Image (tube, rainbow, N blue to C red):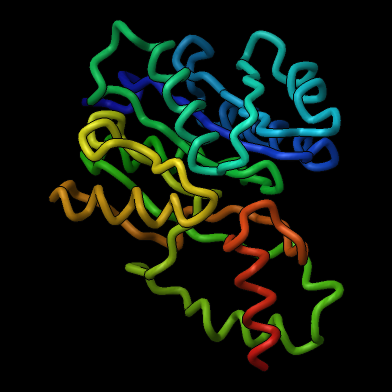
Length: 237
């Protein structure tokens, strides 16, 4: 099956991300254009969860007819991702689940131009899921040595890394559905889904060749998310 036979669903959960969502969505749309994906073959779904700011309004202005914004009150990254993925799969209800590739990122993340093209390549290779990596946009406000400590802990250029980030994850829809999808938990939903897909025996790939740039902010939205990891790493120095 060639990549141009796939439908793509890009899911972006967010909570009070009015200052970040524009950069995120603009980068996603540039990546779609760079990949040459037919506009009728992709859907961007933004899930604004318990937002108290203009996140949803900003997203709607940017997406227009290229996506959909859902507003919920769950307070759960896992639930938000699940709602967005379900909407995207319903959008392609007439297409077999083995021909839908779900791609996931976060609202405080910017993806490079080749991001979706690389995901399409993984899908075309017959894999069921891929875990990419993240780069931190800035370590401002942290201990001056944290960048080096993080770099050493995160690992070198080789593939087959142990990292799983909801900000950079792709899963084929049939595998996603077979393992029950995203767990409705406040954090750790990315690791739970990745583990379930691998334990079910689906072919997966962990690669550093698929990269995104995410926020190095100290206060994240998930209680045990990437911001918490950076703070814990700093505290252990």
